[in-house]
Image 1 (tube, rainbow, N blue to C red):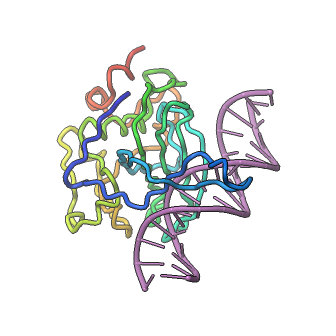
Image 2 (spheres, rainbow, N blue to C red):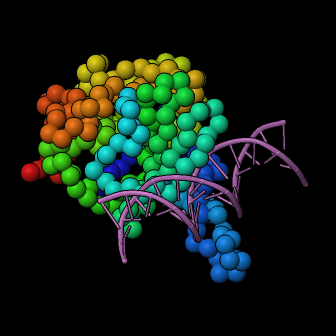
Length: 215
DNA sequence: CGACTTTGACCAGCGC
DNA sequence: GCGCTGGTCAAAGTCG
């Protein structure tokens, strides 16, 4: 699934000092690793989901590789990597410090494969995956969060003609980069087997790619 | 036993 | 230069 995430002017990539690391260098002492190296930055996008579930199932398998307490937030941030060894996509999951019911998921990179499976059936594509796809489809996600420290973030950033206003609500957190939009969803609608996602069919049809809908 | 999570340590970038 | 912070590693632990 090679989704291009165009770097919109507003979201001009400004990732600097972003952590990178290579394999341990042989010359290093045991237990010591070369932590970071310059690496081509990956496209990033994030979305907020109002849910009690920390780790939303999005059709991919993720392995957690770290968790850190972050400044200005009482909630830890979790780091996940796609378990596909050819896929370098990562995601960070944290809760909004202002609204603990809001989970902020930041994806970095692009999957080089399709979703591994939808355990609850292809028709039960999770809302998270819909969000992720929609991010690309409507170009509405906030790419490269650090770039959002722009004065323009004082106002709502997005108009989303394809989505109902009941699904997309402005959200105001004390973190600048979070003064964006959020999807309001029901956690139960995400995780309940066989339940209908909190989107109407027309919207779902618009959000979920054919490859995710078959079956 | 393999896949996954937890957790402390390590390291680079950045601001002062 | 130093301390803070974020991102990652990797060993140990947990689970099915």
